[in-house]
Image (cartoon, rainbow, N blue to C red; front, side):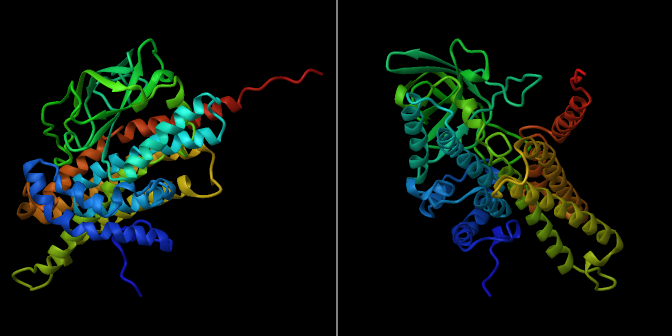
Length: 425
């Protein structure tokens, strides 16, 4: 019987092809694990990991084979980010955001097949989508920049960065407050709104080279969460982007989003897999530590003490809770034919994201209590996990917002059932 791969702890029913791709991920884990503590201490993304992942072919993990990629799916991505999360959560998070760029290629192509673009639009959309995918497959690292510090009461992400037309292309101005691999990625795949548009129909996507004139890095991000993600964000001051390096057809962005199976662009659960991998690692580390250490008076493992047994029981329940939510969501977003209509899948994710990340944080909190003062070190496995997993509580949206939206979907749907039209006699 072959050894179980790390990614199989989450995706436990891999096909042979998925297992082959997961084996590639397994080869990079030792290097990621060896660099994790120093990267966290220095709050510096290990740039050597870019070459490591590129040489393993993993920058094209979810790119179809016809574009030069490995042909993986969301199942592969979730397994990969989980596995990397057990070794270096910062690298796993940055890798996740690179792979979200693939949605800007895959979803437009699906929208073309669904007939959502006109005959004149199809060649433009196809050219941009294929450019995204072939660049990823060739080893280009893409940083996906959408989030901004501007907030709206009725949206999770508000885009204020603007794009105005100029000779031969577009001029971008704005600031992106969140996006891994700042100063590391080859291109920043940047979302901006077209001048003259005030709705999502005006959202467009641009390739911005890292060294393009007018691009600068925001102040270093000294965050509570994963510290080695190069998560500083960028400023765009009159940045020129050629016309063929952008997808600016009004409504293209919203039309492609219609093709996602559930969450925003259909891959968001892979970020929750990062946190679950991190939680699994701190769980394993503390179990190992406290079963190896013994009480001075009895010689029994510390883990056998009643208080520790309670803590480990709680941690085990929380970890399994994260797995259950993730596996259910993964099945909903990848099963063929679909098990549930898209609104139900989306509602499940709005609940699931917060449930996973809160459960993972509780695992780290339990590990912190169990390890005591000896484990309360900023550079230790427990201290790093506690900080890393805290970010999951607020990333994209907190659990409370997701549950509120899920409740609104349920109650509004039921409310609508109460109203009907009368049949005239």
